[in-house]
Length: 78
Length: 360
Image (cartoon, rainbow over all chains, first blue to last red; front, side, top):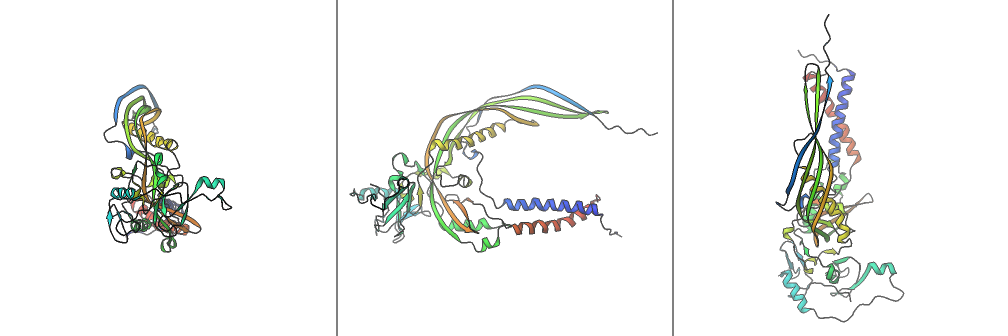
């Protein structure tokens, strides 16, 4: 038989917070639907077909960095 | 002498307008249809020079000096009524008889547009688009939707500058590739640094920039793109029945906006060739614009205005494609109703899921 137990106050508060954040995101999406006037950032609609040409393309390796961090070691059992 | 053109039907003499459905000039009285070019030739053949019939008022009703620069008076050829327009109006309606009139000399010489995209959609299509624009907006005030009263719907030919350019670009980026591995004692992170260089070219055609200071630039850009393949050589006949302004922002002033958009597109296009890196940071960008030209065109826009809570809301529809734009008000009460309602629904679901999945 499934035992029905009440959640702890902490767990309930965490769920409430997550639920509130989800609702807030949805509400801001709904608010965003009301705005449709924006500047166009680019002119990509007006690039002439087949005019894009790359005349030079090179990638030069400059240098490398290596960093290391110690792994947490398991404690020795006595 | 300031002159204006009203197109009269060769059959019945009624005032005729451009019909967006048939893409011809149509007489609303006898339903005759005429091609704009043919009507233009007919009008030119029928026009005889008229003596000066209008003088600037120089008596006590004289315009202020500042007004003289911005206002002009015309006499309607149909009813004789006097129209006062601002200096940029190129097509309007007579306030007395309602006949459409085109103020021809406003678009003569250097001010003559190179192209016009005729209206493809009518006023009813604009109304339908507005209603569709309201649909599905959960936070739109119900009162705004239900009691919406459109104050004005205007079909306007908006002046645009169209920029053509060939762009050469030279770009440099700093890029990194990151690799992770570990052994029994350490976690390693290797970052390899690269200098990436790209050069090339691309061309732009007909990048539009709004040439009217009266029109909000962001609203006009929201209606893009227009299909320029449907543009035709300019004839004043296309303006009959609509409003039109000549440009008051010249090509030089508009160039800066075109350059901004061209620069952004060029950067994006070349950045798309820099692949396989964990991070890419632009370090240097040099663009050269060659063969830059600017053409002047009139684009069709339906403008709808409504007032609500003492605030004016302006919507616009692309008169060619039907693309609609306009910011809507938000119902703050509805916002909080949705916020708390969804929180109330989501919280127990998360709680139950947490129990079932075993993390609570």
